[in-house]
Image 1 (cartoon, helix red, strand yellow):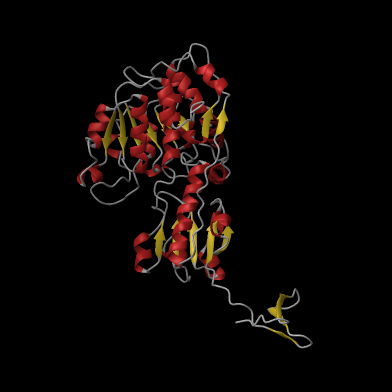
Image 2: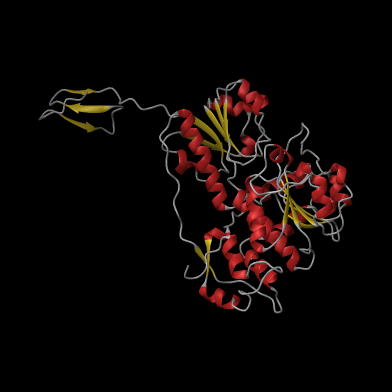
Length: 432
């Protein structure tokens, strides 16, 4: 302990490695104050806000996803690793490293060999539900856009296959519009289901529902495996939305689907897409570069969740990242003449979700040389401009006045009025 008696003051010296203790004519160097060890964390540079989340308590080494290799982890002597779904994590990557903690800033984890990590006593964490609100925003926007342009209809119930974090929120949103839903989730049904909900088999849902939305994890083994789960239903001729995992469907199913019947954010064999399906008059109505969950709020939530896991594992002080932001005002929405309440709702959502622009960019890749397409698809994902969700917006007074003729109308017979639907979707109404 330093003795700070009168005439003996401590002062920092720019030229000394430690603290200089001034005792008059004689000057000597004190030993440096010991600093707590900061774990070295190699992280995918595309994980946003990491410097703010962990910079004060850990040594964060951001690198592009393609640079995360076994050689890099060994060279940096990393203690921890933070990845996205584009990085396969297992024996090949980690054997020979000193990494003892891995986290994926994603809801899913099929890119991680969890059993091998457990055998090696490497702790694993991920961010379940981080992007669920964003995916629901995307699905509802895409569904209503398809109806708005006259390509799809809302006849009959919507089948929601997979009733986890995303599926449950989607059911709530669809019912908030006034649509009926049929739920299918065999593992959840076996475990007791959900209070007040009836569950159906996949075959029952495919038979009864003109529209199906998939929200399942990718599992390759077991009675309820989802790998190519629709293989036995190649005759399915309804409207299909897939934002879960590309390999739930097969290229054969996509090729045999009716024209304009598919809305796909994920793809079998991704990033090698079934490019022939993207041609004019083909089965894909809307193509997206695997960005349904890409909102700023979802990415910040994922970072906060994995940062919290890092702090818990290494015994570090936690940094509260939860800060409410003022809502942006949404006042500019193009509404065509003769619009219905569904059209208006679709147009409001379209102002927050660049579906058509994303579709155009994905289709443009099909005209590139084959060896260029894969890289270009990844660039689309990496450079995607993170969107805002309805919860980030307040509807402006000018827009509210413009919407007035439709606010009391219903999107579907027996459903709630448009004003209530907008509130259910997350928009703040003027003066609320």
